[in-house]
Image (cartoon, rainbow, N blue to C red; front, top):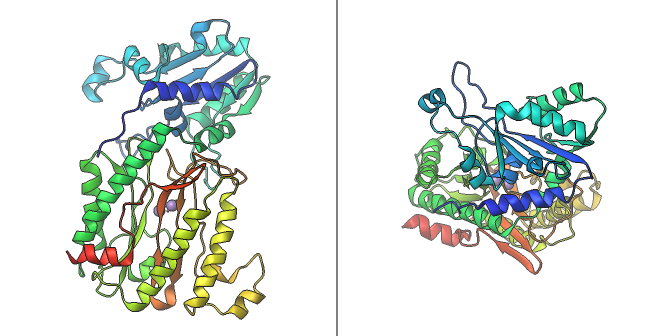
Length: 428
Ligand code: GLY
Ligand code: MN
Ligand code: MN
């Protein structure tokens, strides 16, 4: 499994698509993410700002991109600022990009050292009017930690209070929602690696094993292929199936229990998202299989329901309706309860309380707004579930799916999903 190599042409195209959305006399400034400190003198791994990556392909910290399509000096219409390499950095941190390398990665012809940023920026600010700055507008984000972009917005508005400031995030959300062919290939590669990890785990899981050992198996498979966990893995056995964001991953997997695995790989900056629920002993009980097959039917119907023109809320409402019907057949809900339920408090919420689909790409919960309508080129998850704490288990199934003009392409279609298929693979 190899990450799909990214060509500068993709980042150039992304910048061209962004520039088309700007007002005349505009300036865009985008900052890299901070290198976050640990308690002491260390730092955590650097996670590049996804928008900056989308427009440049550059991973390096402290990078700044400046776009000014109407600048009078053509060489300043696209400028990338990077840290200047020096001997000290080379000894302690290793190689930093040369200007030629930054151009080769991003396609940006004018690359300057970071120390030149203030002068170039001031020149352009004096010439231009509309300033697009970035912010985290993920609707579910709890934004309490400042970023380089947040600090830049504050400083910039203080120094230049009379410019017209605009939101870059809303434009980036529109652009990133529709995936290019390259991005689809990159997500598919991440999905394939996830499948390898899952197959490995199917051969490995046994009663008495700790959840953490299962996590280590996934980690081994992902890391040896240069991937990583796309998000903190959820390895939840028994009653833990029903804890939506469980990631303690430290309990013993017991015979007779189900093991819910919400685990997937990220590869070459693109993410995938998978959930499977498997029997620890290798065989589902009758009741477990009954619930599993109900969730699988909902999953199939929900994949087919992912069509252009709907919102993710439409998908959730459809899923709630399907799940409610299955819950009646499973004896979990009565028709009379459905009849008297209030529209803002559906009875099914007791057994299925989260959304069914979210966009995915550079981020696992990729940027979007709730009012956006699905378009061909969107990549979505489909993740129905039925949680039954009273019976000590829950089932969730999740794949990563591409929406096209003529239907859906399940990017995880080859990852085992049928109950019998899982049992057969576990028996080997
Ligand atoms: N694994 C995160 C999610 O399913 O949304
Ligand atoms: Mn998901
Ligand atoms: Mn998931």
